[in-house]
Length: 238
Image 1 (cartoon, helix red, strand yellow):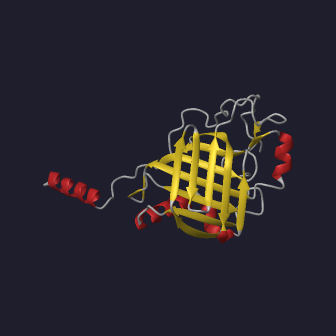
Image 2 (cartoon, rainbow, N blue to C red):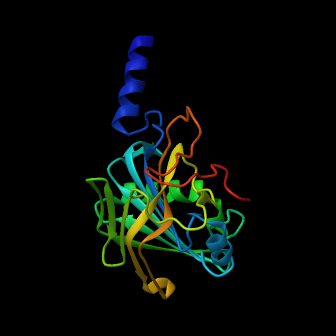
Image 3 (tube, one colour):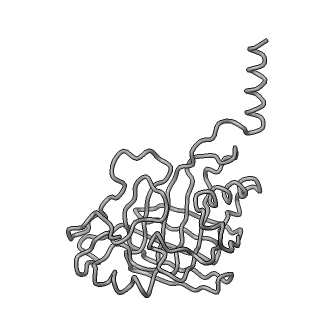
């Protein structure tokens, strides 16, 4: 009898998607409107004038949330604020969440709940949502993300002895919880969001964190940018 009860419970859990949660894992792009790995002279100038916009994109390779599989999908979060959002103490004042057109209603709800759970600051501001076709593509060392006609971001690793100024260092750390990350260069970023009356266009800047989330950390999270040709301080400035 006990075996039959165990079999029935297992069957019902499987049938209704109530198996144990699998921690969501994947890749993240965190794009700032100020440079995050740069010389102190530039960082100081940008700290008080720039950084008011922040775009994050999570690409899920595995995982479930609330019993719903969310692997193979993306979710984006665009935030604006009155202060430099690269400073983890600064709070956004408005946000738009991008949900994938390819997701089912249950998956969209799970993605939105996962996002809000991991970003409690969203509970105190107005959050709007948009459903758009999304594409997250890696090819020849370049990552490209698009969300409809509103967002296009393309990033790549540092090039040999390029983009140096007065002694590059890691000036900020990601707002997202990451297992590992580095800084890369934005080839192109175009954000046009009518819900926030925002047009944000950048290129050729060290303003993006690229990393992994949801995985066990076995070594220091920050990895020096590939082929950066100046000595770098691995400790971000507070």
